[in-house]
Image (cartoon, rainbow, N blue to C red; front, top):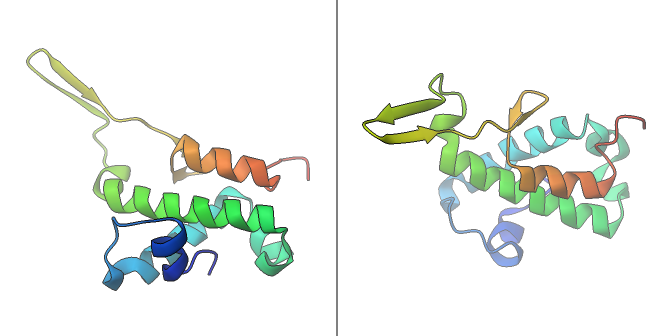
Length: 119
């Protein structure tokens, strides 16, 4: 696992995901993080990356897990916006390679050098 439950709670300081769901959510986030990096993390082997890259990937995995926990029910929703009277709410649509995520996650992964398309 890129980010362990211990890393999530102690290093990252995560609190959104219950301990019962934590391993499952971190594994789901790991698959999405690897997809966002075009399979290069698994291809190179997480243990073969630099400490800097590992740290960014672990943080991105936790951020993605929190994002999925917080917005999971809205991620695949067909409704992207709604209006009630004079109030309009529009859902941000940040999708990369078919994965709904945040710009913060992408920024962490970009810094690893594993998202470069010319590798």
